[in-house]
Image 1 (tube, helix red, strand yellow):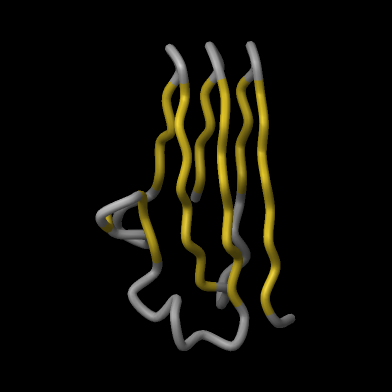
Image 2: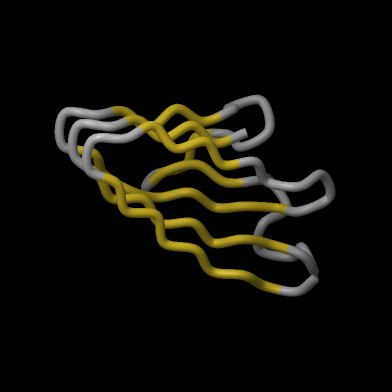
Length: 76
């Protein structure tokens, strides 16, 4: 409940993040040769990443920052 901040760092790995139902999220980050894949039906594209439409006003929300190299990060 409330606001949570998460930082995900990966080198050569696959990371799957599941944002619980009822929780808004903002996802930002960079990958070297890897990729960040986000469920854009739930977290539409914004200027610097992806975010729930109600992120700024949601009582329960996650602010996620991703940094990586060759791996992949999936957020749904």
